[in-house]
Image (cartoon, rainbow, N blue to C red; front, side, top):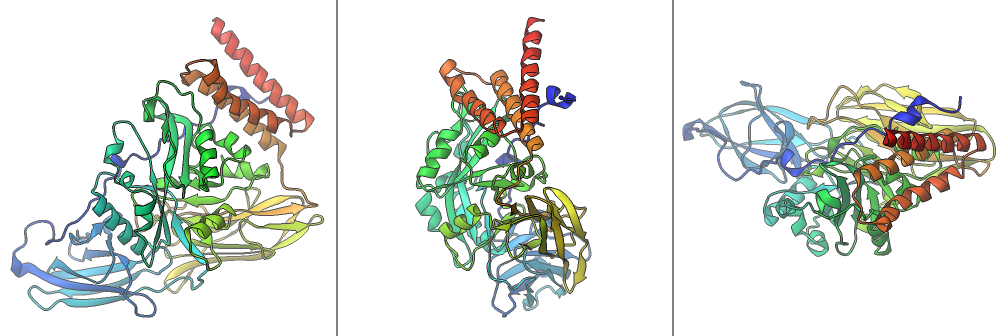
Length: 546
C-alpha cells in the first residue's frame, strides 16, 4: 500500500508558545525579619555555612523546614527559589523564629544533599551550622551552562545580582542572557538592559556570562510560527529581532528566520534552535545547515526528542544538544560540555557545536562507544560489535539509564543507592549491523528534581559509520518531506503576505528543502512522497470548490 491515512490527514502536533515572564514570577527578597509579625523575644539567629569537600565556603541552595509545621520557611534575606529553596551566595546570618528545623543544602546538580537538624533559641547567641557538600563526581573536564535565559520586570542592578548569585548556587560555569522583543511588553524585560560589554563584565570566579538574542516569529494569536532561534555571542543585536504580526506588529509574515540566522553566523555567532521542535522552519533550517545546536526542555518542558532530534539523526545530520531555563532560573535544566579543561565562552561554544554535550535536569551522564564520546564517531569497515560504557549519577533517584541505538532502547539499568546518591552503569558489547547512532538517556520518571520540575537527561549522539556511510532511513526522510509539505500549506493558510515576492521568499525555503531531501529517497519512497503531496493538493482544490 503506497499511502497511509495519517499522511493525508494530519500535520504535526501544535507546539506550545514559549513561557511568558508574567507566568513565572520570581520573588525577590529584601533584608529584614521573617514574613509576618514576631515579637523580638521569639526570634533566634542561625549562621549557615555550606562548604565544599575541602572546607572552603560554598554558595548553595538552602531550605529550612520547621519540624513543628513541616513547612519550609521564607528567608527574607535571600532570593527565593521553587519548593521553599533559597539561593545563598555566602555564609549568612539568618533570622528565624525559635524552634527546631531541618536544614538542607545543595549546589548545582553535582553534590549530594547535605542536611542537619538544629534547634534555635530566642535571644541566644547565633547557632553556627556547617553543611559539607559532597561531590558526586570528581571529574573536572565537564563544564555546565544555561544557553537560554531572559529576566523580567526588575531593575538592572537587581538583575545583575540575581544572575551572579544564582549562577554560583546552581554551579553554572556559563550563562547566556538573550535580548528579545515583543511589541508592548519588552520594556519590562530586565535582560534587555544588558549588552555584550555589560554582560561580560558580570563574570565571577564561578560563572562567565555571555550575551545574544532570541530571533522569533509566531502566528496570531500566539500560535506556532516559523520558530525561535537563539543567536549567541553576536557582537550586537541583528535587526529585526522579532518577526511577524504578533511579536513585531509587522504588517505581514513575509520575512523568514533564515536571513538573520545567516547574518549571525557571519558575525561569529552560534545558532541554536529553541524549544524542542517548535516552529515550521526548523526542518529546512537543519537541512540547509543554518543551525548549530538544538536546545531542548527550555523552561522545563519535558517533551521527548523522538519527534525532532531522533529523526534528524536518522537521516545523518549532526544534532548537538543544549538546554536552558528560558524565563528566570527556576529549574535545573542545563547543558554539560566536555571542555577538556578549557573554560572560555568561545571554547565552550566550540565544544557545544561539536556535540560534546549532555543535557540534564539532574543526572550526570557519560558515554563511550569504543572510546568515542558524544559528538564523535566510530568507523567500522563492516558490521560488527562495539563496546559501550555508560553511567548515570544523580542526587535524586531516577527512573533508569537507557542505551539507545537509532532511537530504540537496547539496554536498561535501574539505579542503585551509593552513599548519598544513585548510580547506574552499562558496560557491554553491542552488535552493529549497519550505520547507526547511539546515545544514553534518563527517561522522564515519577520523581521530580528538588525544584519540582521533571527529572531527565540525554546525551548527544555518537555516530557509528559502517563502510564510510552514515545512517540514512528513507522512511524517516519521507516523513520529514511530508511534514515540510504540511508546514508549507499551513503557512499559506495562516500567513499574511504583501505580494507574490514575499510569499515566494518564505515558501521557497520549503520547496528547496523538500526537493533536496526527496531527491535522496529511493524510487519507491520518492513516489510515495510525490503522490501524497499531489493528493493533498487535490483535496485542497476540491475543498475550495465546495
